[in-house]
Structure formats: structure tokens, C-alpha cells
Amino acid sequence: MPNLKFTDGREIQVGTMYGIGQNYDKHAKEMGSTLKRGEKIIFIKPASSYVPDGGSITLPDFSNEVHHEVELVVVIGKECKDVTKEQAWDYIAGFAVGIDATLRDLQKQAKDKGLPWAIAKGFRTSAPISKIVPVKEFERNKNDFTFQLKINGELRQFGNTQDMIYSVEELIEFLSSVFDLQAGDIIFTGTPEGVGKLNKGDKLEADLINLVKLNVNIN
Ligand code: MG
Figure 1 (cartoon, protein in one colour):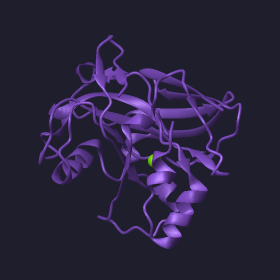
Figure 2: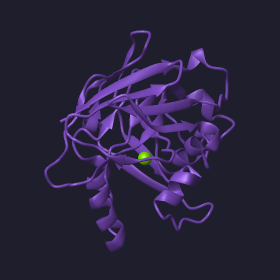
Figure 3: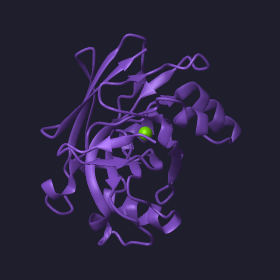
Figure 4: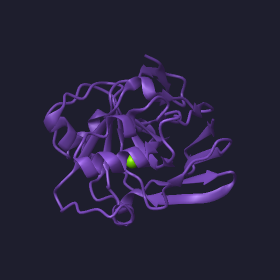
């Protein structure tokens, strides 16, 4: 498996990538969510779907609607099982910005039929992630990351993690109650509103503001 790179030059092997669905109210509304408080949508992308900064999302020929979802990405730093939200920060290696690329047409078909989202969320090249900013550069339990996505220079999505329904620490508490999280595991923490379709030739610039950027081509 490929390695994720930190901004300080260290590297860590990409592990399992977890995603949370509908973690921002306005995005949940634009998706027509019927989720009740306390219910969570968790999905997994294969490690092989990771794309580094400067790489490309290849639009698959079996979808006509590939959407961008810009998200804060959390990287786990050590084995993590049944931790509380108060302990969660100690298991974080760092933060990055990523694109949770989604085959919206296939996802809708899966939702309608009650089928899994594995193809819609985990297809090849579905997980571009920037370099990781090490956790030591942040104040403990920081929860005011701002991030945005520009496509061909035009602002399409803008978010702040204070609008998350489940915080980073709550997500780690929940995921670690179900899964044994490992160093190099990734959490896509959900997207704000403004998702939309990607087209061949688009140039994406995701920005975890004042921290790190991610450039992605669409082909
Ligand atoms: Mg997402």
C-alpha cells in the first residue's frame, strides 16, 4: 500500500479509510436525509483508492455523476480501541484535507434498493488526500478548522468543523467502539453543503485554510 506523507517529511502507510455520511445539517438536507439524531452512516473505502496531492480522480465509465465532497481528514496515529471522546485526541497523528469522491447515481440506486455503498464510495481513485499536518502543531481538541474547495478557480464548497453534528472526538469514540483503529487509518469526517458533479479536465484545489492544500485533476 502507498504511504501518506506528513508536512514534516515523515510517512505512514495508508490503512483503512472510514467515512461518515451526512455529518453537516445543510448537506444532510440537500441529500434529502431522513436520518434521526443518533443514527450514523459509516462506510469504508479501500486503502488502494488513496490518491496523493497532485494526482487524479479517474471518472469511471459506469457512472454519469461523480460528485466532489471536500472534507477534513483525520489520520489515526496508534492502535485505538474503545477510547472515550476525552481520550480521542491522544490517538490522532494529524489532520489533512481530502475529497470523498462519490458516484452519486450509483449511491442513489444503492439507497433505493437498501444495498451497500461500496462501489459508490470506494471505486478506484475515490480518495485524494493532502499531506498530513502533524497533530503536535495544534492546540488540544481544536475544533475550528475551516476548509474549502475551488474548481477551475471558482469556490464551490466552504465549511467549518464547528458545524459538524459529530465532532472529531465523538467520531473516534464511536468508530473505536466498533472497529480496531490502526496507525495510518483515515477518517473522512463529512462534507458541508455544495456538493456537485465533476467533469473531465476539472482542476480541483482543496484548502485546509492556512494549513495545507490539495490539488487534484479530473480525467
Ligand atoms: Mg463524504
